[in-house]
Length: 473
Ligand code: F0G
Image (tube, rainbow, N blue to C red; front, side, top):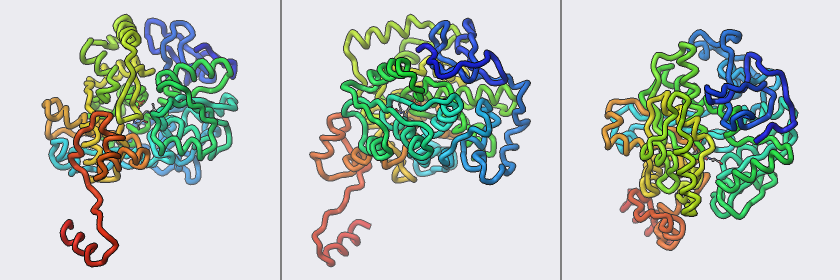
């Protein structure tokens, strides 16, 4: 997409935008609104001249109290403002994002095959709009505000749109235009966009179609685009890793395991760790595992099967283009119960390949059955999550069974969305109502509810109720 005419500023400052391809290296000012390089069409990074900034000398500096009442104190994103210093402090927006929890999860760890104390779950569903998206949205929203945008748009499988709609309704600084595909969005997420008053355009197509359209529409109408092609989004998502490190007393875990959809998170995590390493703030990079749903497995296919690599900034784009041509020719559409990651053309593919190179990464695919079983384990062992999030736990289990993850390694699985985002999938899994099960899960290839916790049906009779409790507890 070409630059919209919202704002264009000076070329290079202490913070600037830079093409991800080293051989291009084009730079743009921080207030230049664009989602791809004007010279070569690749993605952009937000880059910093750290020598002219004041990065922390040690991560423990973040233990120090921040100014009460300021965004740095209220937000788990702006708390780390010094590591994403593109934003002017007096322009920071917050709705209380990023106040999330890293929880030791021994019961789920046992399921995965890890020793006690090794598995930790990062509950990003505890964000105000119920998913990790708020981490990135606050950064893009702050940027949008800085450049004077009036409207913001996104295509979404439901969480980005819920997040954008929440920021618009709480702050009243921008209005939201949301593109969703037909029939694939969970009701929990759709209800948020509608309730928050966003203009919601439901197009006849899937997420990949919606993504293409929103880019065209944003360019034509000069609307600020907040999908993760927006490099500022990913700056905010870096902070998920800072909070994980904080909870682990600033020690890197062995593994970060994350579901892969549009590949914004994995890309942001790679950038977070690469910068921390460059700044000498960590000794060791964790390894990265990105987990696709088997019905939406572009990254797995390209990385593990066809050998696509970042290759030090010289990726073989013909390999990627050939694969996409095959998808087009076979009219392949993504399909998984994990609707959040039902994506065949991940917009951050190249950034993710870079992250995989920097973090010695692996990619796996998991079936809908594995996802739903892992989801039930997460629910039984803690605060629960939506199906896409459980791909991380299913992926960790798979990697453990392959011996790639060792039993004594410290693993952090990112739970990207709240349990209540997709109650249909959860209830169908646990229900005794076979018709409902078949309707929601059976058609997607889930055959068993291995860990179902069925409701016990009793008549409205005291004795029978007591008998049931004695029998089942
Ligand atoms: N988990 C959840 C709950 C998501 O909503 C998404 C993406 C992902 C994982 C994948 O993350 O794109 O960074 O690889 N949801 C987007 C949306 C596409 O529109 O809400 P990713």
